Amino acid sequence: MYPAEFKYTREHEWVKVEGDVGVIGITFHAQRALGDIVFVELPKLGTQAVQGKTIGTVESVKAVSDIYSPVSGEVIEINEALNEAPELLNRDPHGAAWLAKIRLSAPEELEKLLDAEQYQALVAEES
Image: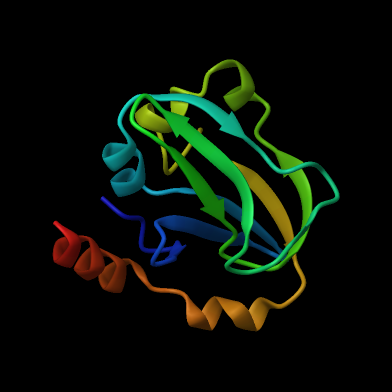
């Protein structure tokens, strides 16, 4: 369920590294806990993301949750499709519903994140 090539945070975000860029999103577990997602506030292009700091929010029928950046760097692209169809996060959280792309400024931060096996263990503990 959780792609092995991704790294994960304890706050339920993921990052997939493509060269010097991290594609980020929220996990299946996060979207399931939130319920029906109705709005996404994405970071602005050029924003300097800092690992562990808020870069946006996800609003569902249940709550508003912060999105924490799994990596540090410059936001170079955002997924505009989520502005029109935030429910994509419920349908494809690990694929089409990525949130942003960040040019990594500190790739060594990836070592602080969880691998898929560790993340699945975390989700099991929380359930």
